[in-house]
Length: 540
View 1 (spheres, rainbow, N blue to C red):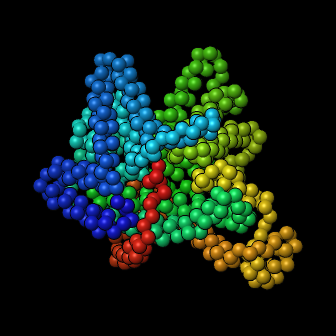
View 2: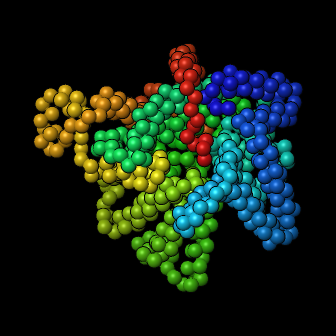
View 3: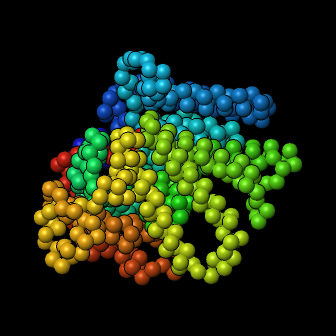
């Protein structure tokens, strides 16, 4: 059951909300139990057997958490062993379903074998659920979660707005909210929820999905080794970047809106990442909850362990002007590369995802290195903030777009084909009909080497216009978090000081004009429901 489907919008959601409010008027516990059961039904909608796969995992994790809770104070070593067992169990559970087929293919590629395995169907949302359960076990072990019940834990894991594609939430930020919500209808929560959901639906159906009609044929051609040309290469790269951008932005808004119907505020997971002025800032805005998880549970522990080892060996640490190449490589580069390798592997079982993760690891390392050496080679850099911001934005944007080709391409070879087109290795061409209609520019373009080809000019113009419109929306307009900031659309989101004029101008409010606007957006989204498409991030 997709968020952008008739059965969800006109069937599942109204029934769940009515049941929640009716039962909540009598007892909070009944409303929360109803929400848990409804979430389980939502998860089982595609394949009921998914419940038989995920339920034992939930029960085992709950049992391990109980053991850690019992032994955390009295036998800390045993509690640590239980934590390690829990992490290994969850990773093996994820690995079997998500990576068995990939490992089989890798073995066949390396050793020339012909291993054959029955196709394994991936349970929905297993990557997000697994990381969420690991985070819960780690929080119990660290004492950040001190009390929990089966009912609370089941609701925490199964809450349907974030069940399939995140955000990856923490028990300590969700359950306190469930314990204090009124379970009664709240007009403000409903208005904010409808607005978020409607704007997210429009981003998905009106902005993201149509771009697939332009992008998919280009990547299909590249998969067959066909050269696209300079213009089509950039349309393919920019088009998919914007497609997944608005797809993810749409899902994030819809998840926030759905949770808000029940009085729950989810954490931020998407905050205009294409406006970032560095790749570090990009990962602070893109898939924020994943970045938080990877930083807290992989990067920080690894970096801390390596720092302690260097201190014990009386070697210099990391930080300040005295940072050495060895300390930088050991304490920052290696943890960063490993963390992003895991990020790539988590996103998908394939070589392209691994390369994509390593590319981002390399870019993050370069960004951190620049921050270390910049004060040495350019002491007055802080006196030129506009130059730093604009240059950083351009470098970050182009780097993200280039890396996204690897994320979308069906193979490393196909990605390399598109990259070669983007740098003009196969020449720069334009459709003959389009080139002939450019007036005085025609002779100038031909003089610098632009050649005519037999492709469709209408298709190129359509692709360029779609890319241009989506770029304007992504880079030139405020996002929904900014528009609804006074009503805290996500945990911790509040208005900031010295906001741009445009943000103040389009500020959301519970007014008649906004009601009409949101109604129009809702109608436009609902009228676009005819051709359903899955959210790109649901496959992970």
